[in-house]
Every structure is written in structure tokens, then in C-alpha cells.
Image 1 (tube, rainbow, N blue to C red):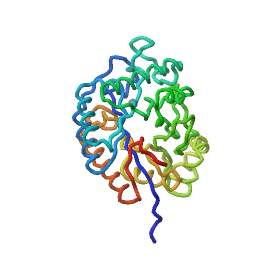
Image 2 (cartoon, rainbow, N blue to C red):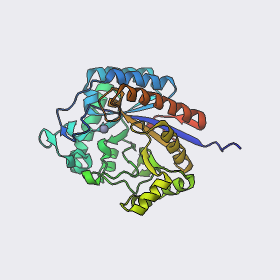
Image 3 (cartoon, protein in one colour):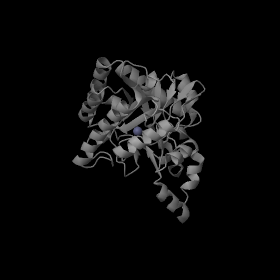
Length: 322
Ligand SMILES: [Zn+2]
């Protein structure tokens, strides 16, 4: 029996940003080093040559880097229909600065600034991208998924039409960030802004359970409670909540997650990673040469599998047609 062909679109979103000590949760404005441009560029070309489309969500230090600028301009010139520049605001390295040299964890979430301060930072990055790369971004990503109640209005004023900052099932409230535990992967419109979540979701041993939970995130919160009985249930179900990202997620689970999302009624996927993961030792996910090799190989294999398995289309976020 052949399974039915489902139409699905996938956007590769690269968080293109400075290097950061992920173990230390410190937010210095001088922390702007970008030493992985060659590795970033090489892998972009590999993905493009296999047919993928890239949405590169650049932040301020990345655009400020002259090598990165040259690479981005070249990609835009050589692949005008398959490369999009989106903006990604890391509040602590984006002028104007409102606090000292170092941001608190609270203010590292840009949604915790005032509406005027959030506006000023998003505008400053947007203008900086336009000045240096000659394109006006229309897709926005809040660094640390820090989207808040004022963000959509701000985006509209600044000429954006799409936001990709929702991170379903994730709860950042312990770090004073947003709570997405009741957010699904459903794409929707809000005040004229298209909201396309970063694909994250549930997998388990039972497709039926998986589909049920992916549509009802409120139950996941209950299932994750500390309770020996629930712990056993989770184990028996093989329940995992994962992001569609090669960072810490193996190929087998990436395929399972993509399949689960498509089957759950969310056929449009965002596959994402951070640019520093392309150089050994810069993120917790890629520490050894072996990690780096599997990161790249599994990314390529996943995208190839996706293309071969479904009636699939690789798109930039800005080209989403619903
Ligand atoms: Zn980031």
C-alpha cells in the first residue's frame, strides 16, 4: 500500500550569529566575535547545491563582520531566489544600548524591554542590514525566542510581514523568558503578521498518541510533571519533545519528528541551527571532529530523505504560500 502524498514545504533557517559561551549565560555587548564565516559559507553552498533554500537570520555582529558581509552578498547575488536575509535580534549586542556593558538574563529577552526600546533595536538592525546588504528584511526572529506582546505591532510598523520566533512546547519562564507550552506548530496570522513557528514537537512509539499530543500541547505540561507514575508512562511511550534541528537530535529522530508533524496536520516545517555549530568547539552540540561530521552529514541526509519521501518543496520563509 502506498501512503498518500502530502504537500509540504520546508524552510532551512540559520541563526547566523556571534560566538557565545553557552555554558555561562552572560550577555556582554563586547562579545561579538565571528570566526566561523568560512565554515558557514562552505556549508551554505553544500545545502544550496542539493536544492535547499536558506533563510539566514543574521544578527548585528554577524552583519558587522566584513567577511560575513562578503559571503552574504555573494550568496544573494548567486542564489537570488533561494537565499533570504532575515533579521535576528540579540538584544545585548544590538545598539542602541540602554543598560551597562552587560545585560541581565531578564533583558537578554528583547520582549522584556519597553516597547520603544524593542522598536529601537529591531529598527537599528533592520537599517544596518539594508545599509550593508542592500536588502530590507521582512522575516523576523527574536534572539532566544524572546517575542512578546508588543513585537507584532513593532514588526508591522517596520515593514515586516512574518515572524518565526514561536518555539512550540518550550518554556523559558525559569530564565524569565516566554512560555510556549501551549503553542502548537500551526501557522497563523496576527495583526497582519504571519506567525510560522520554529518546528518543535512530540514523538513517541505510538503515532496515534503523537498526533493527539502534538495538537494538544496543554496535556504535555501535565505529562511532564514529576511523578513516578508519569515518568513510567513517558518511558513506556518513548515520549520526547524535540526541535527540528541537527543540534542534539539524531537523524532517526529528525525523520520521526518531521513525519509526526506532517501527520499531525502541520506540514510546513522549519529546520534550524546556529551558524557557530559549523565549527568545532563553539556550541555544546558540536564539540569533537566526529560531532561536526555527523552534524553535517545528518543534516544533508535528513534534507535528502525529506525531499525523496514527500511531495516536498524547499522554500525561503518569505516565499511561504500556505
Ligand atoms: Zn540566537
